[in-house]
Figure 1 (tube, rainbow, N blue to C red):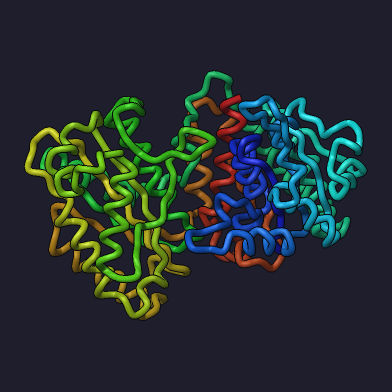
Figure 2: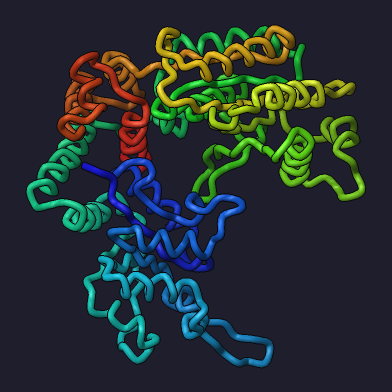
Length: 472
């Protein structure tokens, strides 16, 4: 099934956290890239008005998210006691998104969180938005999020495909959910946030731990280059390594480690590598990132912060996971290598007792697996350049590039070994149910049938569902 276009319209003051959660849930159901949500759909430098308009026009389904109707209407009272509503202004973007969707004949569904309701009568909405009241809304209760999500998934499937396609997809979705529930997850289980991302890539994780332990107490600034195909979620592998440190080195003390987190939960955030048009501006972007991240004073230079501010940070570890696409290397290989070398040489501190800084730099490269014979010339150049950096700075830099699709047996073992699973023998049923969700003739189905392997992008939504059920 091709990915549907789903646009989430919401007001930040009303539904920011719920919009993020809804986006994650729908991408779990329909795949990465299926949902347009301004927090991940608008990049720096984009013409945001045009991007939003195109997002609505390209969508098949527009979801109008409401958590509190007063906040969604944008009710505001000024210092003189005068009350206004942002929704009444023609230039209000929440209003314009719905108007554009209605004008273009989009399938619109109001998604009401918990007890939220749209205005009871049409006269309480601008005339252009009154057709919203004629359309069936869906309610999602936060306490029963996953159960209430299914009718909405049903609605979207009805729009993007025929009835037969909807029934097949919905049946597979339910079968996978039943297989997960059949594992018998105890209420008192040990399934934590570490189980949200990646899977047991034992060989690669062992390599990291060996290198990391050898540097413990010797190198305060460490750089790990994680190179892999986006389908194998190399950024999530970086997250997994950070979670391992939290549980293995810090006994679960999240307060002893600093990392950027997502808005909807205390989970590690992936960030774009700070880059500019040239080496000089790239350095400037990184300095600006550090200033924002650690809030050092305007009258303190970046260099002074590294020398005197870093030792004062109240953490054992400081981490970041940065992403960069291989396309950034086009005609720019030398400059990016210089940038990385500058980073390694700059992040040094003469003082003792500083936190250990761990930078995970993810290089996303489509089709980059463990077979060198299949690598493109650009991929070979990138890996060669990174390996040269690691040879030049052996105490600070390491490449982890062997991230192939995961064997079915590895996934079965991961499921059956989860703490709190009463019926580990049912792990194979989860594997079969996952395989049944693949569209006939798709690359994912072919990989599984021919090699009994899964892309990690298809495994992580299952891990998320297991985590959701375990954490209820």
